[in-house]
View 1 (tube, helix red, strand yellow):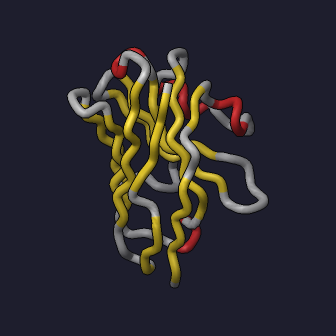
View 2 (tube, one colour):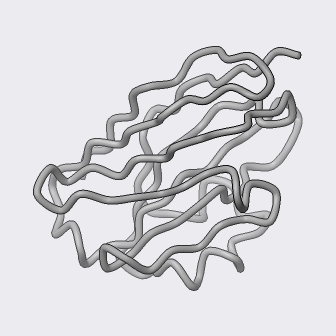
Length: 129
């Protein structure tokens, strides 16, 4: 299993970024795939998850601002982030797990790296005011 993130970087408050996770090595629609983030000194938290191509979960902090989508042909999962805020600053990770569907993601609290079986390397997103 391989997860490779791209698209991170810097933005101003109110700006947008699009993150992409390229996946390989597993049956794409058999896994739940999500975006997670970890700010300095804080636990890793769920941002959004998708499974089966259409079932999604969003954390309350980003609902209405971020959108997660998947492309089965390309085997990619994207996170479109709009109306960015300084509190969105964190290292963002793509994670995948066969046993975690989108509806399970809300319960992944406080488990950090144990939330998912597979992780990308992570990339920094910085939002300045």
